[in-house]
Length: 161
Image (tube, rainbow, N blue to C red; front, top):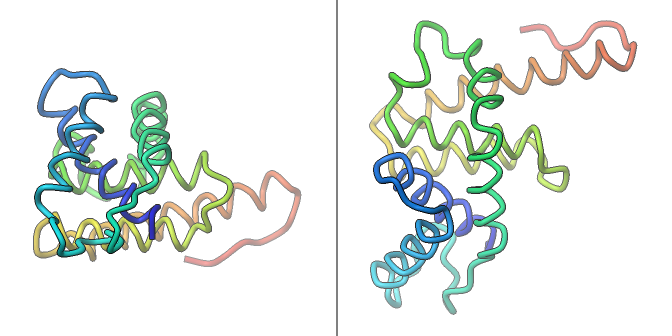
């Protein structure tokens, strides 16, 4: 549960970083403070009753996405089918980047967890169709990663689309 809240903080921080020129640490701190005020005693997405959040994981996500953003955007670009990253809503773009970062660079998060968390964030903060869109893009992205791993390891086949 602490990681779910960390992802929420990371999404808000990345959104803020895209809107305003600021430092990642400051954006994270601001998102955490706003979340505490907003949630009060009512738990939000992933907010535990005692308000705990894995702030180190939120920081890892934000800094990781920022560091690898060009790579992530290139990797996702082929799966957007008629869209460009810069044309997506800010929420959808950040949710995709977060999940792609976890899929590419975080070994202890199962792929389906990274995708499901991105879908939930998109549903909560994005538009009406955001969850479906994120699901479609990340599903295709994961299949592509699995095919590449199979090709790299010398295995034949892979999943059919």
